[in-house]
Structure formats: structure tokens, C-alpha cells
Image 1 (cartoon, rainbow, N blue to C red):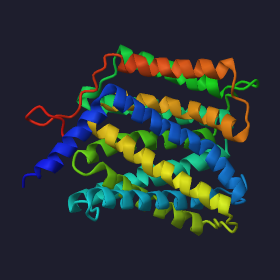
Image 2 (cartoon, helix red, strand yellow; image 1 turned 90 degrees about the vertical axis):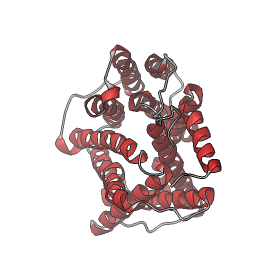
Image 3 (cartoon, helix red, strand yellow; image 1 turned 135 degrees about the vertical axis):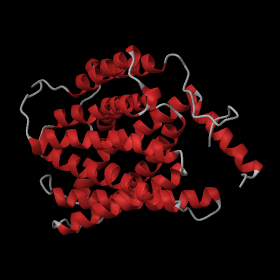
Image 4 (spheres, rainbow, N blue to C red; image 1 turned 45 degrees about the vertical axis):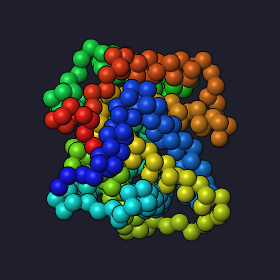
Length: 330
């Protein structure tokens, strides 16, 4: 069945915007800035809801609430913008639910447990490795995504910037534990696998609907696990409720935009922006929590990450997925 001309025209305009190097780059930076702002928000949220640092089950429950609320927001947005109740085609339901388990449930369970068993510095560095893992997986799983000299150099520059931003006067301790660094590596791999998975699903289904389903399902599983292991949130204040809604918005908006960008563009050209997230996290923490960040080291880190992004994307060609008639696919 043919699409209505106005709907086809809208999808074509969206594709043009999302494949324009400047437009796509700006949206990717917006995503990483939103995710970066989650760093101080999560820390503040634990204080406002009185969640102890070692209380992993309550942290998982809190994350479940956040992602489930984000799924509801995304569902409502899709409903309003499309004028119809969002629904996933029957054949794509298992994939969307599986994506929720990998991208939301597994990634965040391993992340929270890992962070609780290692230092913040190593957590930031290993977390940033998810960008490298994404580009590496794309090299093996997507024919058009082979790693070349530019991608390799961009990854080295970006990762070096994150390491620089994360370093402290004490340096980096080389210890390794399965429950700490090991779990963080699994979390990073989960993120990378989910990025490739979501790109494939987005070719067959509306990316916004996919985002809604995966957040709802992944968040629900996190809530069940959090409750099962004794998690609880007993204190609710107005400031905490406002912060919680903003955190849900972060997940809804950033995951939706990121999935759209992955649908229309090469994974490597989008994923490289992920190195900006921890750098934004450092500066956002300085802005909202008063932590020290405004120094030459962090500014140099930002320049290195930016240089890595420029190296990977300097040809200006984002090569959208095209239909047989040569137009960008919707």
C-alpha cells in the first residue's frame, strides 16, 4: 500500500535533515549533552530520594522508574505527533523487547553494580569505551562500516580525551575485578550491541515507537528486579519529583533522537559523538554541583574529543540509507 503524499514528503524532509552533516552533528551533540547532564542529576537524585551509595537494588529500582516514565513520555509524544496510537508490527515485537533487555535492563544493571565496585575515574573511562566497541562491532557486522585510518585516529583522539578528562592527581589504579571493571565492560558491550540492533530495527519500524517499547519493557524489568532484591524509595519531595521528570525526559528525547540518527546514518559517524558524553558530564557536574572542572586539562580533553569527531566526519558525507529511486529512506 502506497503512503499518502504528505506523509511521504514529511519522511523525506526528516531524512534530509537527519543526514545533513551539520544538522545531524548538532542533534548528536544535543543527545550527548542531555546524557552528560544525567551525571549530576543521578547524583542529586540519590541525595533527594535518600538512596545510599551501597544500595544497588534501590538504584536499579530508581533507574527502572526513570526509564519506564521515559517510555510513557515517548509513547505519548509518538501518539500526538503521528495522530494515531503507536504500535509495533507483530514480527518486530520480539526484537523491540529484546532491545529493551539489552539496551536498558542489562546495560544499566551491569553499570550500577560495576560503578559500585570501582573508582569513578575508571568508571568514566570504561564507560566511554562503549563508543569504541560500537564502531568495532559495526566493522564486523555491517559491510559498509569498515574501520579505516580516519575512524581509528578519531577513536584514539576521542578516547584519549576521555582518559584525560577522567584522570585525577592520584592517577589510574591498575587493579581489575569481575564485579567492578568486568561488569562495566559488559555494560559497554551491551550498549554497543544495542546500537547495532536498533539500527537494524529502525529500518523496519518507526524509531520513536521502538524507543518507547524498549524503554517501557526495559524499565519494567528493572523495576521488578529492584523490588525483588529489596530496593525501596521511601522519600519523595517536590524537588526530587521535578528532577525525576527531567531525567525521564533526558532518556526519552536522547534515545529517540539517537535511534533516528542511527537509522539514517552510518553507525561510526554517529557513535563517535558518544565520547562527548563523559566530557559533558564533567562540565555539567562543575556547573550544577560545584565540582572542579574548569581547568586546562578538561579544556584540552574537550578539544581532543572534538578533533576525533572532526577527523571521522571531515568528508561531510553521511550517506543516508536510500530507496531504489535514490531518495533517503523513511
